[in-house]
Image (cartoon, rainbow, N blue to C red; front, side, top):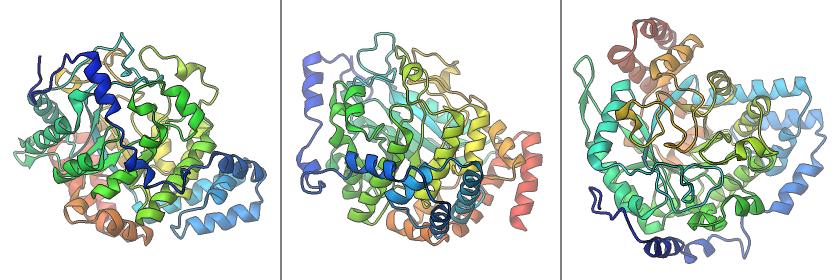
Length: 475
């Protein structure tokens, strides 16, 4: 049996194993090593955390002043902030983090919708339902007509941005991803008022691929290319990824370097919180940003901070000794906002509504809503099923409900993608973010796209609240 792209779905295991082995190109790793070493130095990170265990108040305040200049912090400075426990000082950090966020991103919250296209996977990630040895997972790969239907359902909510998610498998290799991109961009719909609408920007969350494959994606109009390291701690990484291409720590570690080499200059980094000590992972993210800045003069466009949640056939979300509670989660978001002040911070519907809203007021700038993460779940209007999706969501509210709550908090929802069509990507947007100038471009477009959403999709209640936000912004 084949899918609509001609890919054989029932491939022999020997072919799948051979395909998996061919994924990793060592020559595309070694060129980015520092001698024989990675940019993540485990001993150095542990030593930095240890010697900054009892931070000086004056030193903390000096670091906060540096963050306000939108300059990325060093690992040493980040460790100082991560080790703060004094409640008053933590409040000062949170206040400064919010100032940094407003200086760079203003009151805008950017929305997107996830679209899961395939849950076939060759990897053995111990914490996800997609892993290949999970017999309980119901496998499916969307055909192009199904992707069209999913896109129409996403558009009917009012979304303009999408992030596509793929398992690592021959059926969802680069040709399938390119076909999916073309298909989504081709869908044109009418809003309830009769205006034309379409998805304006498609980001990709997928496995690491070769530089040549990334060039293919770039030619099809990919937005941000996301690859989360999951954990920067090598031994934990080995334990969590026992087999498959993802078992190669370095192949994943340099995936964003490959994207930059291919011309995909908007990259998304991230770590899965709960696998290892959160302080270590934050310093790993800072080290990642530093190496990208060093080699390409561009840091990560976004950083994501998902927490472990329940997944089919896995108990790690219960048994891990590194689980991050809500208070630590908010604190960690503040530290990342201060440490990498220019980056967009993403919090998703994994989180429960209350903690998600608190995360946004703490420093996050992007989120999703009306999300369905089962393969084909938008068109089927299906409820969450643990055997049909990668993990379970905490916030299943509609886009309208979330937009209304943010408007009640004085925040403006942005569906804008104009900056990317105008070429404000990579080093261009980084310069604007560092200088606090990007918000001036984006404020106008945020107002326009929010107006568009209120006119075309908002409920009467949301429109009433949203009008007041627009009046305030125009003033």
